Image (cartoon, chains in turn brown, purple, blue, cyan):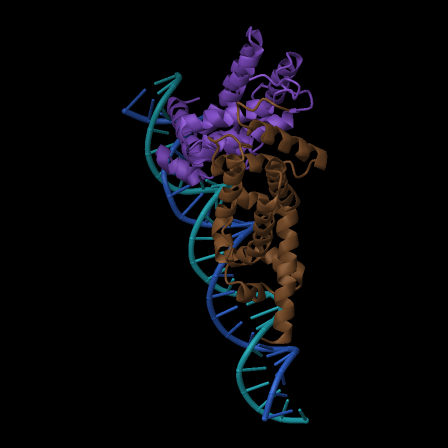
Length: 184
Length: 184
DNA sequence: GACTATCCGGGATGGCTGTCCCGGTTGTCA
DNA sequence: TGACAACCGGGACAGCCATCCCGGATAGTC
């Protein structure tokens, strides 16, 4: 691979990451090319389709999330770990409009992109939920789809301040507690 | 207004209501015209823009929601009334993909459409929340944007069964309880 | 039954999108 | 330094979309 090709590829990727994070997945390929200072052909040569570009970005990003979520398995306090799990997802989505959109199912298939990158996002979610349920920190009738849906709500407050998102997480975490656990 | 014009207008409106409810706001004006059995020109004459068509539909739909929500003010049990409030919104969104999308902010501005129809949706939401907070049924730090965001989560489970949506409402309602109220 | 204002159909237009292709350029290596 | 393969730019293309327009049809009225 020629040096200039490598350079352009990196510039396109950086530009796309910034654009998707700030404005969401609606940014056109033409616009990304313009901002990166390259032609549209250059973009589509490195990334044949927009999905491929999205995938290259998401694979990396989701990978980091999966790693952090899996690390929580070692935590001694599973209640705290579960709140941390919600916080990781929320803050990631709040900081990245594209991730939040993909998570909400508007645009691209995030699970598929993560799988293509060698990460099983869905399994990581399921494992985190299962751990919390086994520790009786989360009600047994909740499923992964519930968590995902609720996370969309938290992420959607990305434009608000961090305290607002913390409140949203608190609401969700309290709502997910087992009904019989009436403690604070 | 000529009789055939009146007839066509009604057919377009009925078709659009069904299409938006079943498939969401992504259905094209061409497609609505085709299904209604009229030309695209006929649609755009009755409804100059797609927004106008959306507005004509939403104004009516949201009006009914606002009426039902306001009626809850008379309820003797405000805790029950608040859950009913969440249920009304959730079921409406679950039964109508277009409403759910508009509520989530993807597509059109629902508040603006409701206002154009003579209904203040935002005020109805705020009033319902305020009543619940004054009755100490909902934590004082929650705001209307919180409720809206959480409702998006509940609505998004429209394709699931009714029990799933009831569980989602339960999670949200529990999460919104005042922290000091540790009762079941 | 005829006349006119009204309304209809659907093709045309312009703007957006993602993707492809080719003439010109530039990095790389002998 | 020269030559060639790799790469670039951006115009071209096809597919969507909402919106506009005009020749033809039709409903309502005298």
